Length: 208
Image (cartoon, rainbow, N blue to C red; front, side, top):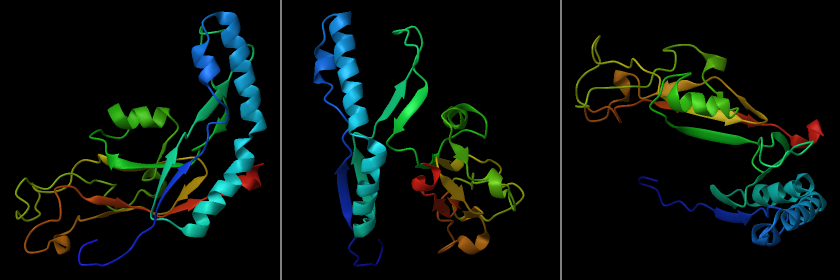
């Protein structure tokens, strides 16, 4: 961080997808594949992620790292009755990263293109829950960041997002870098504004 001399914790954690998929991948015929897949699924259930997640979360909470990298963050879906590859399985049995926060400049307006793709994947836009002020507009100042705000040079698009999925509750969002007061040395910090919102994480144990 600029001007600082801070230490932050960084953590890498393997979640283990729950079974060895080697025999499934190595299967050379349908019968062997089904036997291997059945054995793998039974092992996944035995290594119940919902139970293990509590210990994993405890490790992270105890150390409070600034950044956590997760490996084998998996989602298991099932289908009953099974129909092979005719249709994809849609019943989620285990979701190792059920609570997700996705942020970014998606270069798309609400309900279109990239934002619509994430909405289809059950992500919720943090902005509508607290729509106020400038309506979440974040784009764009002029190419020359020294140009003052005006009726022409103003934010007119909402293309920067905070999206959440899972047991997450968002507070009231607001846009940063959207006023003349945000300029430093006569320059806006960026041609976009930033989006800030506080996110409260729910407790999965209360839903069991």
